[in-house]
Amino acid sequence: MRRRDLLLTGLAGFAWGAGRARAGETPAGAAPPLRTYGLAAVGRPKLPEGFPHFPYVNPAAPKGGEMALASLGSFDSFNPFIVRGTAPASVGRVWDTLLSESADEPESGYAHLAAVIELGADHSYVAFELRPEARFHDGTPVTASDVVWTFDTLRAKGRPYYQQYYSGVDKAVEEGDRRVVFHFKTKTNRELPLILGELPVLPKHWWQGRDFAAPLTDPPLGSGPYRIGKTDFGRTLTMELVPDYWGRDLATSKGLNNFNIRTEYFRDSTVALQAFKAGQVDYREENISKVWATEYEFPAVKRGLVKKRNFPSSLPTGMQCFAMNTRRPVFANRAVRQAMAEVFDFQWENKNLFYGAYTRTTSFFSNSDCASSGLPGPGELKLLEPFRDRLPAEVFDREFTLPVTDGSGNDRSGLKRALQLLLGAGLQVKDRRMVDASGNQMAFTILLEEPSFERVALPYVQWLGRLGIKADVRTVDPSEYQHLTDAFDFDMTIFTYGESEDPGNELWDYWGSASAKQIGSDNLAGVADPVVDALIAKVVAANTREELVTAARALDRVLLWGWYVVPQWHLQSVRVAWWNRFGFNDVPVRSGVAFNSWWVDRQLADATDAARRGPL
Image 1 (cartoon, helix red, strand yellow):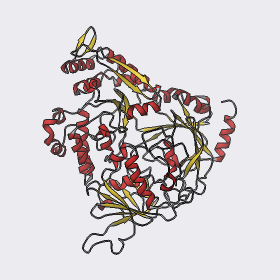
Image 2: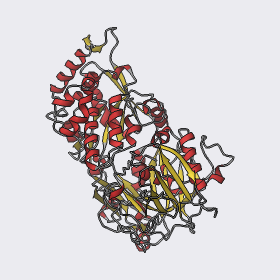
Image 3: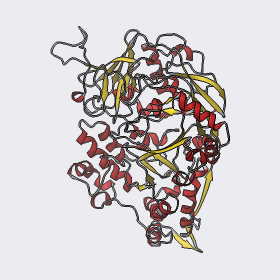
Image 4: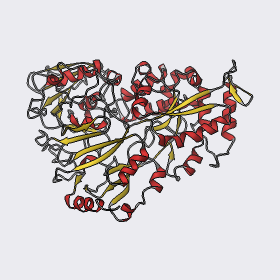
């Protein structure tokens, strides 16, 4: 249930749906509110009013059948909105949202639970008018009261992220059974309409008498295309199609959500891969380059029973990294953190572990025009100059680069630079150990959530050891990992900061000073810097694309030169293998794969299922 990272860049750019402000709503001489069927982050929504369906779907796709998936870890709750408990990611399919996004647009929201979106001409509010036919699975209408209750409850009792994400909203007001209005605290946060459009609407009546802040074991009531089916907690979860789903014929639903989904949970990624090879799992996205290169030539692939393919993706790739917890004394010093980056040999790992598949990441907004490069331009300097005395000089006069080695694993140039940084930070080498003034050896633990990351971390541990640094690797199951990172109880971990072309309010959760103290936030590094806060505010309040890009690049420089992370790598495609039981509309989409537009092809499924019942 991660944030969507949406941004609204100005009312003038929207393609407004037909409709006018209601009589009596607009004072004489004031601009009327604007009413529309959809929002876009930049410019106009790609699809016109009245579009029949998303262009990448098959509107006649048959419903039925099953897709079996694999997931690592476990689950003990159906409530994904709170810190307590571990919920399966797929449970989000139970609830509909006010707007529905397109997989082939940078950022968009089309009317779904809401029939009409109304934006105040002065940017002070957004209103959603619900479809009268919208129903929860028990037949109860979805009302404005449900929307307001959901919003208030998530902000009061949900994960800390919700408090931060909705902080720009003053209040939500019910105006009749089907109209809800969100009033904003300021008129400059143009991202909020799209953020609120992705609100999952929960049934107020069903939650009465239940403790929202506690893990949930009862199958929740929703209004979405799926409901919870057969479940074995921690092992198996089945999501069943709702046969009388109220929104089945909407343009935002046609051709989507075509099969039941059964997810089997595994403790180990190797076992999950073997389950796929054995035909117990139907679909797998592979994120380990070595496995993709060496483990997908088994007999079922050669017989054509299993298909494999790289789907190109044009989405921003964000920042995958070793994230350092600056709350811990070992990483409180910027020079020490920079030394950690000097030690890491990406060229060796890419050559020896990843078959040369990856590109080094050098920005928190990689594969996006928001990524900084070279020296700051005039617009960035204008934003950065007021903070010159609080920023490293490198922000202004040096291009940010990462060390490049010869890939041998024995290039000592980075180690030498790291040593000088560590000595400059007050550490010293004594008896082949890196120690502080009290003689305590520099030591930390790298926390991992699955064994597959160990092959990345263990060589790094060896390189650190050459400097007398004692680094250990600790691998825990996903549930414990979630608990430890929610409580910031770690030294270093591998983490991914996801981004879009239009960064916005999610930046508060990643880097804002307030989130550094909020249990369960994504500010794992513990960044609490007023300069960073000021630049985030500039990004969020940007009125134009140019202002947004300039502010994001300035923020990117400050974060990079803060050395809060050791950047790793990215891949601009999605690697997918699947048993040949499915059909999909084979047109490129920005996200690479529009998984929820696939369907079970009965003829293919019968042939493949018959074949895999025999020897594979």
